Amino acid sequence: MFVTVSKYLNRIAKSPNEAHRFVEATSAEKLRITREMLTLIFSYHQTLPNFLEFLFPFARDIYGSDFHFGGFRSQVRFSGADRGLHIADRGWSGQDLKVCYNLKSAERNEGVSSNEWPWHMDQSAVHHTFDIETGQASWVVFKGDQRIKHRIKSATSDKSPSRFSFHTLEQAFTSTLEIHLIFCEWSAQTWRWYVNFLDREIQSSTSAALFSSLEPPVSRPQHDSATNIQQRHGRQVNRNSPAAATNRVQGLSAGEEVELGPNISEGATPIVPSPMFPTLEKQSTTDAMFSFSKLQETHTIGEMVNNANLLLKVNQNVLTELKGAYKSFESLPGWPAGLSSNCRGDLTRFDQRIANMQNDMAIQQSRVEKLLRSIADRKSLVRGW
Image 1 (cartoon, rainbow, N blue to C red):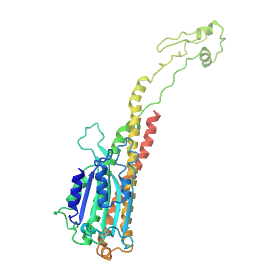
Image 2 (image 1 turned 30 degrees about the vertical axis):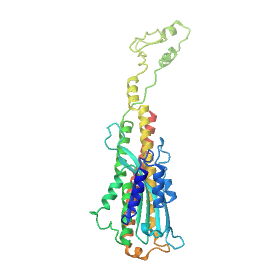
Image 3 (image 1 turned 90 degrees about the vertical axis):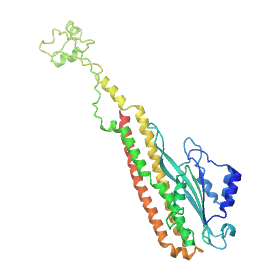
Image 4 (image 1 turned 180 degrees about the vertical axis):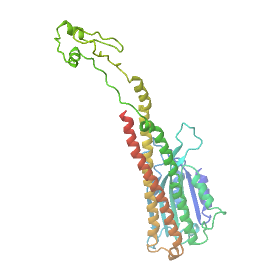
């Protein structure tokens, strides 16, 4: 495999102005690449050392403690003093910009049974280099499947629209903006449906606690003593008298007749205790509706919602930094004036489309925060029973 990668890199050295390297990597597993292959690819493309930070979350971690890490890094070398390697055969002038970042998305699991969780969180790590003199562009992408690869290949194929053209410096630069937008759209497009799914799960798990009508438990009846009976009828009885002994009610069960003593009038209503546990059957039904497993299920869904809330924040922050970086590049010394003048409309559209994606994710984040409040309230209902 190492020899195959070496031959591949030698072949793409003579390729057109833009080249893409895709590495498949399941989010919860190890990278499907050896250390030697990774070192060769990174050395060939002169990737930023910071890019390694975005590869560490691709690991086998049962708790996924590092999966939430996200960020954006950049480096520019526009002036002669900062010029990098100049290799004419590869189209490297030494004046370039480099950016790297990672994004998260919710993706459906294909071919799962009805008892399995139909969604999973996925991530992509992106490294991009653009030479501001030659228009040479390269991409190194780590992703859990080939969906991003198919999108980019389709967008940059011969049948693609004219915006993916690399004949001039301006066209090459505009094409790189469009490819950035492919990653950004991937990170934003499915959250609405995932939040809808979480909402339905919460409703299903907690609807019984919200809509059920339950009567409060009835306390145990207490047996009346002879003194209490006599006090109801306004007569005093000596507890040591035979009459008092006759009036004592001992261990009566439902339906028993009460023997009236001489000090209780025959017109009085006898004291008949109600059953000892009148709500036993109803309590069993309540336990089935609000079992501990229901509380655990609600807690698990709450963790999923919390996770979605955090990942939405990470994505919005990364998109903000990506948009801000391309705005700042124009003001740096050495930036080609032709890119600023000829690509002004493309940069504006780039900002607007990212802003639209951020607005969409902000709406979904507001829904997620509402779900978190609902989960807290309904867990209190289930816990209260």
